[in-house]
Image (cartoon, rainbow, N blue to C red):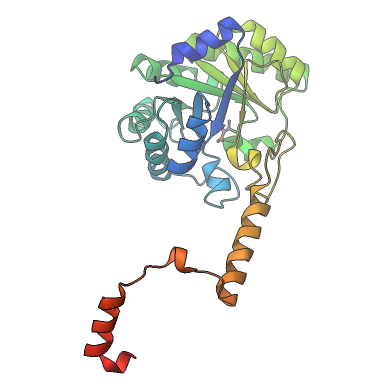
Length: 282
Ligand code: KIV
């Protein structure tokens, strides 16, 4: 059964922790979904961990839609959230609605996420009014790294903390079904989580959030360019993959691969017939 936004909200009401992971392709979405993750985010972190950009800023709508389609083909139960890329919801409301709709119609996502608080509340409201569930994202918002001066923790001064509380409330009033809190002090997450009725999902925001989200490549140890402080590697797949590739190279060079088990054999009589009619092949 497909998870719905009401199921996610119900988890907060019951005090059940929410888990969310990113995925960017069919195979990973299928694994994550089968493992029981209820929320899959096709994050614009795609730009960094899959496409090799230095930030999320170059990511385009077409790239996001391409990967969202693959993820929704793989996820049979999870609610899939498409992350709206940089400047695809700022230029005009019409533009934001058109782009949000593309995630739902073309990508087959079930919700969209966008970064910002009070500044995007009106846009969020219009998207929600169109029947598209929206997830908010405040704190460290990577699409604004140039304004923030890098990937830096947010909400560390009283003014900044108050602004974030107001942002969370503005998003709640605009109708979001949940809010990502990224890189904010755990004590502030606790205050925000207690002051909104919708779930908060933290990344580098402490354990008091209603749920946690991680980038799958960080969790699996696949992306080694940079490991954020908030990430925990539950596996070290990049090492495992390198070992497997090295073993493959050694076996091919040494003649140990392929064996008859990986080869197609020809019936003896067919081979005899072939060598008789084409003696030069002997
Ligand atoms: O793009 C992404 O993966 C995200 C998560 C870090 C929340 O926005």
